[in-house]
Amino acid sequence: METFEFPKIHSFPPLYTKQPNATVLQQQLDSWCSIILSYCEYYKVSTISTTGTIVYSQFEELKIDTLPPIFENKQINRAVDDEFKSDIIKHLIHKLNKAEYINTKIPDQGILVYWKSLADWATILYDFVENSGQLGTVLTIYELTKSEDSGLPESLKNLDYNLLVKVLKNILIKQGKAQILMQEGTDQIGGVKIV
Amino acid sequence: MGQGPSTPKITAQDRAIFQMKQQRDKLKQYQKRINTTIQRQNDLAKEAIKKGETDRAKFYLRSKKHQQSVITKTYDQLDNLENLIGTIEFKLIEKDVIYGLTEGNKVLNKLNTEMSVDKIDKILDDLEDHKLRVDEVSDLLGAGNLSNNEEFEVDEELEKLNQEINGKESINLPDAPNDKIQTLPDVPSKIEPEKSEVDESQEPEGANPIAA
Image (cartoon, rainbow over all chains, first blue to last red; front, side, top):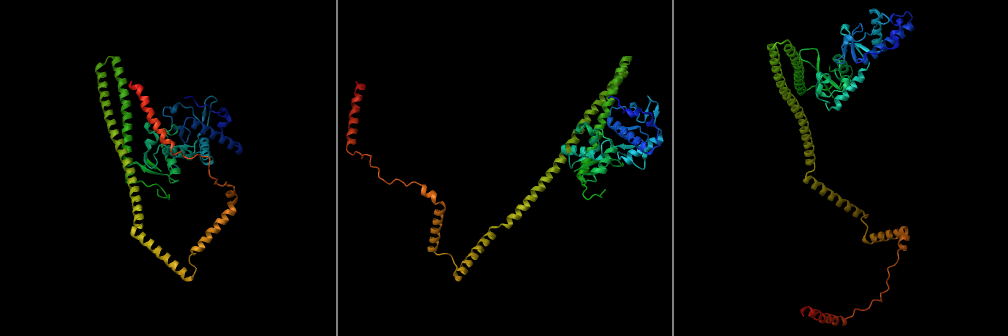
């Protein structure tokens, strides 16, 4: 897979220093967020850490540690410090609503990045279940994300468990279209019935 | 959980199917794992041969063989599970069909009891009675049915109106010819028998040359 091409602004040194002027700072935060979103979409990354490292990508073959870092540009010898990183991520979560903590109480579990909205994911999932005639039957999470022979569309293959949980809990269950089954003896969701 | 007004219910059957599907997923994962071990043992055996360690290579190959037989077993089990899941799901659908049939039957039954022959007979009788009553009353009040004569007058009026409205069309129709056709000759009564005699006499004459 070809390496992600960062936009030109990623080689602009002032981008790496928190700007004192409020208006400029807003623009700077927006720029960073748009970089994060297109980067994550390119590598199908659904979870990043609070410091901006990649936690989960839908591409199984992808070697995460070989990817270029988001908050660093070695060519111009610049990197974002942790404090500013946290500002950027807060902006992404609270201002743009394009990301969410997996668990707000445990931020270290990571942040889900919504380069595709939960509602869009829900539609893809629902369409798949409907078109494969599986509405009303119980489906396992494995079947919905990992199984080779369940005819999953490319976009759902290897879907992040945490993302799937959000899609189910925040969208489909609220719409009354889904009910979940827990895996025995764990707090993990094992299956779902979509109607 | 339960706060939504219309969350789909998870039935006992759903749970059973869910458990079987989970079992199936585990088998699939197990197969994946075994496949990778087989691959690794294959590689290890190759390396051992390169190093000239035949016994070690044999050990890896034997182990690989064993794993392969395990895999075929898991496929059988997987097949069983899938079959069972399929059967249960199909039975559930059959149950729905039977439910539909019984419901339909109930409705039909109810409709049939509502339409018993005796009941209908009684209703028709009642209707007839009522009709007679009505006639009787109208007769008494002198506003009964029209007499035959009056009916005839109505028909006449209808004919008149009909001619007024559709009159032109009826005038356009040509009269049927009523003059006698006189050109046809009378049927001859005496000549015909003579002719037939001639025909008969001619036949033997025609037949003679064939005999000679």
